[in-house]
Length: 356
Image 1 (cartoon, rainbow, N blue to C red):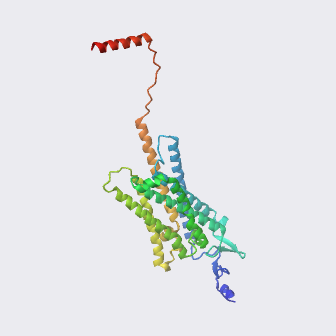
Image 2: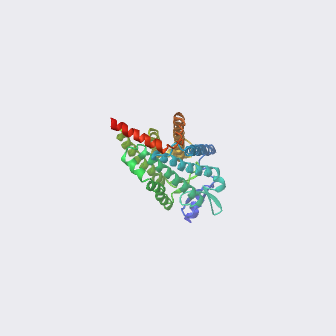
C-alpha cells in the first residue's frame, strides 16, 4: 500500500524503483537541464579530449624521431619519462571520453532497461556499461596523476628522493599501475557509480555527494598535499646550491598540478557553501571545472609535453648540425720496412748514444 502511494506520487517522467524505494527518472526526462547545456558540455568534452589525443600522437611522433636519429637523446631521464607516460595515460582517458560521448546513445551507457522502462542510471541501479566506463576513466585518470606526482619528485635530480626513484624505477611503475585499483574496488563495492545528467556519462562518485567527496575530493586532496610537499622540498634544495641537475621546464609542468587541483577542490567547497544554486544543472564554470577536470589536466599535460619534446629535439638537432660530420682519420696501409734498414737504424742510434 505504501509502495503504491509512493509510486502514485512519482511524476509522469519517473518510475518507482522497488529496490531503493524512490523515484528514478526516465532517460527522456530532462532533469531540469536544458538541451543547450547538454550540447555545450558534449562539445567541450570532445574538444578537450580530441586536442589531448592529437597532442599525444604528435609527442609520440617526436619521440619516435628521436629514437630513429640516435644522436637526439629523449626520454633519457626520469622527469622526461614521467611526463611522457603521464601524457599517454591521459590520452587513454581522453579516448574513453571520446568513445563515451560519441556512442553514449548507441551503447546506452547512462540508461538501463528496468521493467520495460529505460531508466537513468542512479545510485542503487547497477548497469555494466556504466560501471565499465566509470572504472576505466577513474583508473586511467588516477594513473596519470601518479605519473605527474612522480614528476613532482624527480624534476630536481639533485635531491636524494629523485636518485632513489631513479634506481627503483621498475617498482615505482608497478606501484603506479597498482595503487589506483584499491580506491576503484572500494568504489565499486560502495556502489558509487552513477550517470551525470549534464554530460550523460558515468563517473565514480556520482551516486551521491558523500561518495563524490570521498572518492574524488579526497583523491585530489591527498595528491595535492604530497605534490606540494615534494615541490617545496625540491625548491628548498635549490637555495644556496650549485647543482645544475635541474629540469626547469619539467618543474614548471609539475607545479601546474597542485594549482589545478586547488581550483578543482574549490568547486567542491563552492557547492557545499551554496547548495541551493544547482551549479550542476547547467553548463557553467563550476560544473565544467568539476566534471571536465580529467580532460583539463589531460590537455595541460599533453600540450606542455609536446612543447617540451619538440624544443628538446630541436635543440639536439641544432647541436648536431653545428658540430657537423667529423670523419674518422683513415688508416692507410704502411709499407713494410726492410730488415737491413731496421738493423742499420738501430746501430746508428746505438753509436750516437755511445758518442754522447
